[in-house]
Length: 159
Image (cartoon, rainbow, N blue to C red; front, side, top):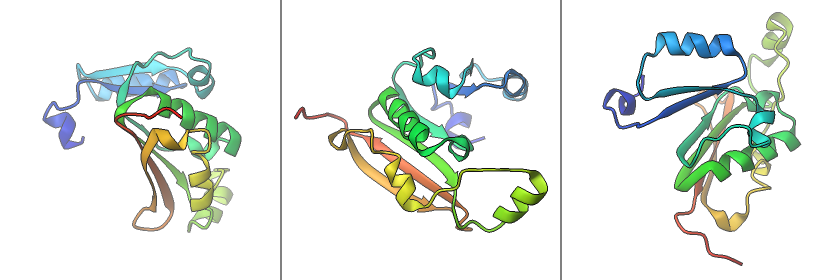
């Protein structure tokens, strides 16, 4: 558990998954008043079937490895829309040149969509450039996972 949760600095922690069994396991393992689980899919998110309200941080690990570039771009834009001014969006994706890729495919039948840094930056194409103040793309220590973070501006100028 992260220190922000342990110190009760997070008012609400929302977990979204389309697998109800996964959500049940999370509810059983993390019995926190701040935890809310939401049964839903990417399609539900994009079709406004999930109402999250404004949030401070949207973090997604393991989702974008399964989304086409077009669908991933739409999902980034929707997640960004939910952010409060100053909010942060962080997503991850396995790198196109990640080590272990052949092993995951051959032995785990793990057929992912891999991306490079350029493709990760392109995921922000549907977010108006004047709506964010910081875009970062970096790799994990082992260079297998690429992260993208996007911080929403605290005030947005029109035009």
